[in-house]
Image (cartoon, rainbow, N blue to C red):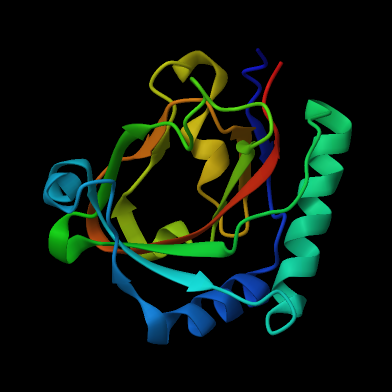
Length: 187
């Protein structure tokens, strides 16, 4: 299986990144993982969903065009629809983090169901506004240069089955946009 990590620097403008953050701010809630009682040891963050493609068309179009372009040039995955965009807030107040994980379940998935195939995490915050909070691929350290991923507007693409996480934020607040695009099960 492909394990390519693609970094697209300055994929979104600072203005667009800031607009996404502002739209998400009124709706943040505590993020959960599976069984709620396990969440605190796996993830400390808040999330906001940008539901409604039509309502947020000005945000969806540039991101989906970027996903289409990167998939066409590098992955060639059979993709269908994305999930609603998730905006994640990692804050110093709770040392916001997300332990390494995969974005989907791939064992025992019926062939008639879709799976998350391509993930993208877009850095919405300038690194001047926080410390820590670095994105990581623990099994692919040699393929990922953290410094390349920190600039506001940078998009990190990877197959959804790759382990990834976010180190604790020690100062300030880091925002990111996460999108998962589905497709038929991997063959």
